[in-house]
Length: 123
Image 1 (cartoon, rainbow, N blue to C red):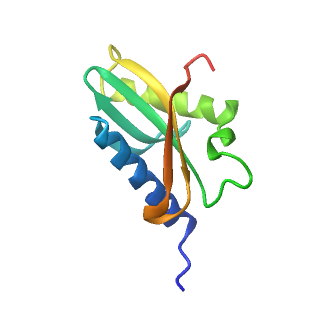
Image 2 (image 1 turned 30 degrees about the vertical axis):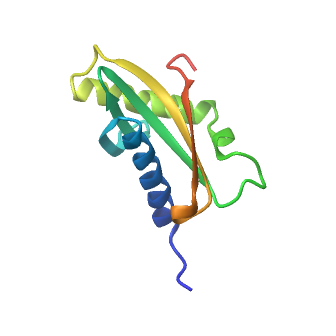
């Protein structure tokens, strides 16, 4: 049996989250947006709103929900990366939210749960 890299498993989880957002009427603008201060896994748009999504994945929930691993340090890095993205894209007048997507399981069998507005820029 082929062993997938951590990155490949993460890409699968992100793809499931993208599908979820698209089913809910969001348009995915970008994925894996890097800045000097952090990374945003998914940037999605619905109307005038932008969601900056942090994706967390575990193969099982025996150790708890993956969303619990998004601590204050990670929130800060996501917020800083999002602010830089807004400046670069000249989108400073948009309503924004920071969501956390939890994926439990691998591949198509993964279960997606979205926590909308999981944290804010004030962390």
